[in-house]
Image (cartoon, rainbow, N blue to C red; front, side, top):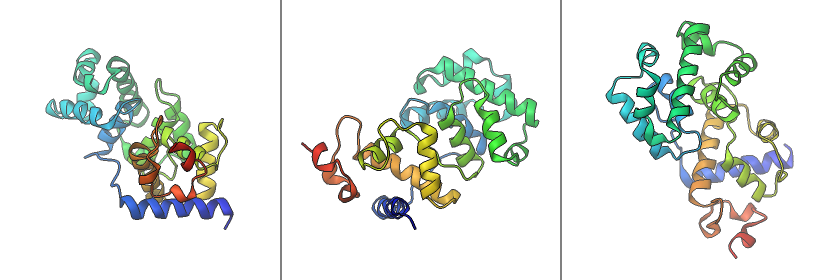
Length: 224
């Protein structure tokens, strides 16, 4: 086992021991998870929950309902998730894609090879790598690591990756050093989110509370 892989997996075990299983992604159906992956772009999850609640009141989590609802009405319902007009448009594009390309059959869609389906998702307006990978991992149970701002921040502060690392480079790093297991990818991503939200914050790090501070090259500096 390489030195990086040993440390990366040690981080996973320490975080899991500290936070416990995260049970992510919360969603009653794969369709809800897909919509949630779009709604959570650039916003906290509690805002997404309010938007999803509004949609559930209107019984919107069927393909037919999402196809039938006017974009303007959908935008009004998801207003708590912010950027609601753009996100309503993105949801519509996504649902129309699944309808036209896969006849609304998610089983069929997720049987498509991972590289091909990822490319197709990235071709949909408003769907970037993090959203596409969230859909693949959490709704499709596909073995792909979801990278977000927390992942980048934490591993940069640990001193394990370059400050200018790209999304793809960060994902390649995780794939090289984490067992290709959907459960581990799921938990690891959610654990990094918990660490980033609770300790390793953007403008301030509560290193005294961090369960992996002993491994961090910046912990003493960040506490100053």
